[in-house]
Every structure is written in structure tokens, then in C-alpha cells.
Amino acid sequence: MSEQYEPSSTSPRVAVVTGGSRGIGRETAERLAADGYAVVVNYAGNEAEADKAVAAITEAGGRAIAVRADVADETQVAALFDAAESTYGGVDVVVHAAGVMTLAPLVDLDLDALDRMHRTNIRGTFVVDQQAARRLRAGGAIINFSSSVLALAIPGYSAYAATKGAVEAMTLILAREMRGRDLTVNAVAPGPTATALFLDGKDEETIARMAAQPPLERLGTPEDIAGVVAFLAGPAGRWVNGQVVRANGGIA
Image 1: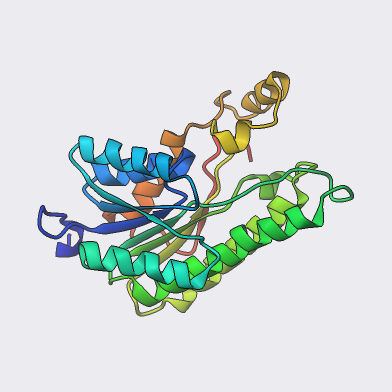
Image 2: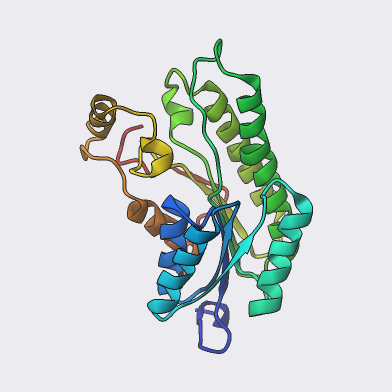
């Protein structure tokens, strides 16, 4: 194992987690901090939740700061990476968990909602990955977020799934563009997971039906997904590159 995978009190590996104030992003930030990373918790607007995430990490003995940035704004994302570098000396892992979702049949979807998803989910991924590709240290990892709904073709998800198709395309191509850099680029595609993003707007019957679909007969948890991210970010996942990992309990 090379030195770059030996975090120490003086020079930890550093992870930037977008969307790190809530849900899967927050659980991932806390998991990476527990694994020894110094973590930069990015948030879009909810400063209170970001501060809670940082407090949880520091109270557990980890290192973390919160930095506000709109992931689709290249100037703000550059400043996010600047903050990580000035505070911790560099960036090794980027977990791009920020995203938005509006559900409706294609025929009914408001085009403003389509544009918002495009801006956050597609442009946001492109902007964050662009900075990551320019700045990550050798031995690093870029981990994007897709969704298992892309393969499931569930009615109502056309616009959201389309944005995640774009994320997968970027992920697979960027992995090949990083030849010679010693960087891995992968995407995690969760299935139904018990987060506010998934649960909001669904009745109990719908949630129960979706929970029963995987052979494991339950919804995923943020901890389930954070474990997959931690694997891809760490030394055990170094030979996984240019892949989409469908972490969904066997639903598809």
C-alpha cells in the first residue's frame, strides 16, 4: 500500500462531498471522516444542516469544514476547491452527491423543473468533475451519483432519469480521459433509499410497494450507499474504474 493511503494526523486524505449537509451526502461525509479523511461539506443553502454535519464529524474526532457553493456555478465551485486546498493542502476524493428531483409524466412536466434538474444534475456534475479533474492528487477518486431508476424506466421519472443518463455518460468518458493520472472515476446508482429526496411526496402504500421490490425486501439506507462510496474512495476500490455501481439490493 502506498503512502497516499495512509492518513495521518498531519496530512490526511481530503474529500470534498457536495450535497453533504443532508441524506446520502451527509452520511457519506460522516463515513469518510470516520475513515480518516478531512472532509469539506458542501451545501447549497441550508447552512444550519451543514453546520450540524460538521459538528457531528468534529464531535466524533474527525476534521471537517462547511463551504457553500452552487454546484452549477463554476466560480463558486472553484472557490470550494480553493477552500479545500487552503485548509487541508489538497483534494484526493470528490463525491458529487448534490442533486434535485421533480417527478411528473413527460407530457405534464413543467419545463422550468426540467431546466432546474438539467442545471443542477447535468451542468453541476460537469462543473464539479471539471474542477476535480484539474485538481485531484494522484491516487484520487471521483465518485458521481446516478440512479437505478435509469434502468428501471419507471413512469414519471423521464426527466430525472435523463439527467442521470447524462451523469453516467460523463462518468464513463472522464474515466478514460484520466489515463495516466492515477485517478479513478465511477458512479454510484442507488435504488430506492430512505432519504427526504425519495420519501417526500410519496404515500405509505407507494413506499411499501417500492420497499418490497428488491429481493432483500427493504429500502436502502444512507449507510448502505455511504459504504459503497467509501469502498470506491479507498485503496480497496482502486481497480474499479469507469463503472456504474448499482447499489439497490438487487432491484435491477
